[in-house]
Length: 128
Image (cartoon, rainbow, N blue to C red):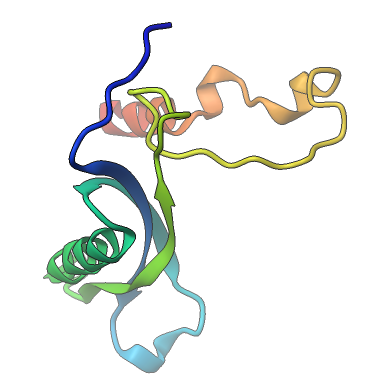
């Protein structure tokens, strides 16, 4: 592995939370939500947080679904902000470190088969 160069900007990753609201606001307490991870190149955590909030706010939108109901995509806020420092690989956008019970021994339970990965489920739906 080659040493990484320090730059004037750092890489940050922000986990943004959005809610999808269909119809009138009082229709449901439960909403479909999206957690979106974006990568930011900023000098400070403060400037990265500001940019993450700007991205979230500018991503809000609404549209009519096939049933003629308004679907609103609303930015809720920033769930987490991570500095992707020198310890991160260039292709990393997020990481979580946690303690787990025997992950290698439980691999078949923990790791879903290819067909259950989101990219394959979405492609299958598009083809039908």
